[in-house]
Picture 1: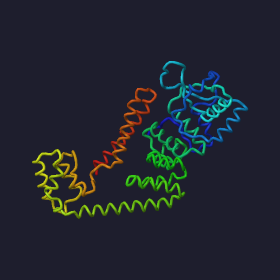
Picture 2: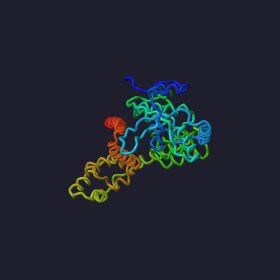
Picture 3: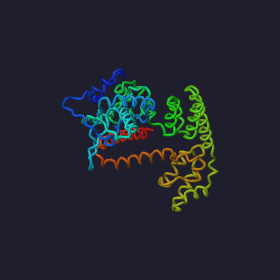
Picture 4: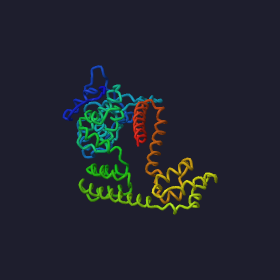
Length: 380
């Protein structure tokens, strides 16, 4: 794999030096410090930190009130074209200081103005700075770490999680865990958001989600409420999965035990009658009546329905007896609709030049994953 831009490090002992290597924290003699109104500076698009410690911000604000704004903030020109008015910027480094300075300005009742140095930085550089600015602090929540991993996977595609981990100064296992956190359903993410220490337990519970999303949500809330440890969670998940496996086995046995004489010609004809022509009904009835009881499984029912109805619909009466095994799961349908909704949103965002590269990389990554899944399905 070819070497990519970005930083490689094994620890966060010298984060500021790494940031300095990426953008340079020293104001050069050729650079000018501008006083820019706060409302013209947006947060970095790669700022993963969504929450800040109020007490720490208050302490920082108190120091700034006494000593003034120390140093400068680094910004880049906003990638989107300016539409009238003053130029806009994106903050690259110094989000905590900016928030603390806002508190000082609000207390004084004066407009908030920021001392900035403007530099034309790439998305990769901005992502690098944002990751190092945040990961040097030990209290970055798991969901925000997961967001950083997701951004790196998109930015440096097709880099693997081992390489992403090295970029972030972390292990491959650390990156894999955060990548899994990024993929779990929102109700489970909410538990991690409230109780970050529940991350590994919730990841264990996510194994249950595909079988029973309601049971997974209930178990996650129970684990959070009772403060269950990972061992306790694993036992509960194993028990829940075991119960589902038993029910599925019983279901298969009931399907295989069905007697072909239970499916009369009138039953099948009534099932196939909706929107179908009589000759097709009669042909289907003849085929069903000719089936041997040992061959009459749920897959045969589905195959027969597909051949007869052209895949347009399944036979209601047979589907009811087999548990609608061929019906797509509502969860899969819902997830597919979410993906389509996101793609439509991206389609609208393509008009924004600042978004195009990210959308292109993300679409390529999704297409690659879809191709892999289709290939696996073809092998089954």
